[in-house]
Length: 558
Image (cartoon, rainbow, N blue to C red; front, side, top):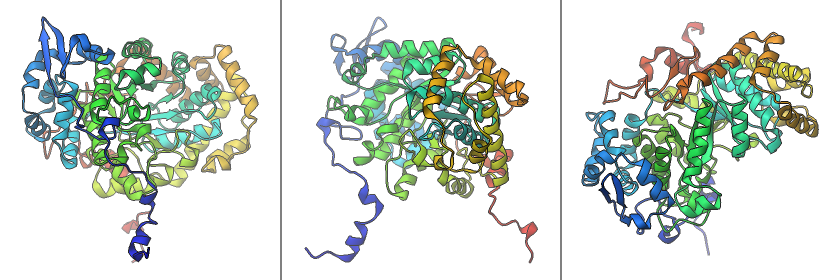
């Protein structure tokens, strides 16, 4: 066949490397309002739900039982089920309708009612609603700090720089699972070097992750997954009750945690029950609410390639983020997993969350080059810093990534690397050389780092656990080696777990250890002139405006 030349060129564009699929309701390849989704309904008898979304109590599966008993505000449930869903959708966009009033209604919806309401909103309306419905007034961001070699010096240096750039939460994981203790310590020490008050986690197998938290090596957890069908849940040897129990374990030790879900996971596991992605995700959000967890990481997350492949999938992803906020939960709104070869689509993926502002615009902005991201790559990475900052600069948006000057990055990376060098020496771990510190200070990825003896490191990590090392040993090592300021920051972080203030919804710390959450910094958006406006936050706006490569007229020779 003779080709038309423009189509030949179009076919070579990066977007043609992405995967797309036409809708297939029976296997769950549909964004929302699939033909098999149930109609909204609820019946309550003597305070007990006897019907939920067309299903009788005797036919409830485990998820239905859990949601019916714990997840719905029954006081308003019958009133809300009889309200016009279009009216509720209009209330979400109406600046004159305060968030506090809407939440009384949206927390009383059933999963099917929630899906129906979301389906009434177009993408622009979802942005309007998200701006109002996020729990915390001021948006923020979360980043990934990893590398393919689990190099502790590089982790500490990257964490220090990311903290300086404004990320109040940082997450690491491992390429080799047994590195977890050293990765957790490295990100904690590096982040406190960059900015006291950053909280960190290490995403590994759940029992190990909990153990790290109990020892004080981490301050929060998020990769505790919930699913929208019983089959997927039980394939993972879990139930809603077991996840709720795990959440209580974290809370008992003052550790913040949120669940993780996201459209497409049930499709990937081959157990959708023929339901749409948004309906199944609604069930996940209700499980989270029912468990008393303060928040949720959702928005496709690691399964983003599935919703993004179907018509309206990116709209659905913003919709599930919005639904999380409508249930008065903190939302770490995805924008993390790499999913497209197209730079235009990468921007499209995050633009709704970016403009509206969420509790965490990304649940994992890669603060390293994606080649080093052991979470399988992020939608945005360290080489996108300048583009991202310019978008904030251009649109007057605070999406919590600050431009910084090169000399400041060098200084803080060097201090973070030296701090973890001191900790390794104090704990009797394998030596971190001055050569490694220098490489981490000036390097960009793991190819720039001297190779460590991985077998020796892994052995030392296990020995560290066997010796019963805790956060107090880390504090002592820092203090004894002259890093009193970082030792004080790590100590203060440990003290916060006793206070428990940051277990509140959408809680973060500022650099002065003030806990900022939906309790004391509730979103008060009610239209133009209200809510968080970055240009009124003069300190933050001045930082966002300070793009190092912008010309300064005061220093120009006219």
